[in-house]
Amino acid sequence: MSSKNNLDKVQNAVYELAKGFKSIELTEEFIVDEEGVLKLQKKRIVTKNLPPDLEAYKLLYGDTIYDEYTDEQLEKEKERLLKQLINLEKKEK
Image (cartoon, rainbow, N blue to C red; front, side):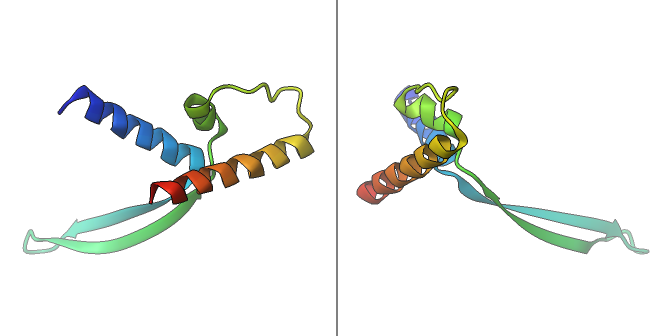
């Protein structure tokens, strides 16, 4: 695998973190029956919505000083950044 391909994979992963994503976790529990055969006892599927990660966004698009922002300003900036990510995603399709 080329280093460019690896870099693209890393950038795509950071991009997914920056915009937030849905994660599906599958948990299966098996038991051994009397005959020594593994049988599925429990199966659980959990869907988690992971919110956008501001640190990932800053890594991709540069750092902005947010320490001095009020909660309201941070919320507006979050909405602006989410819209920007959605627009970028639409352009890529």
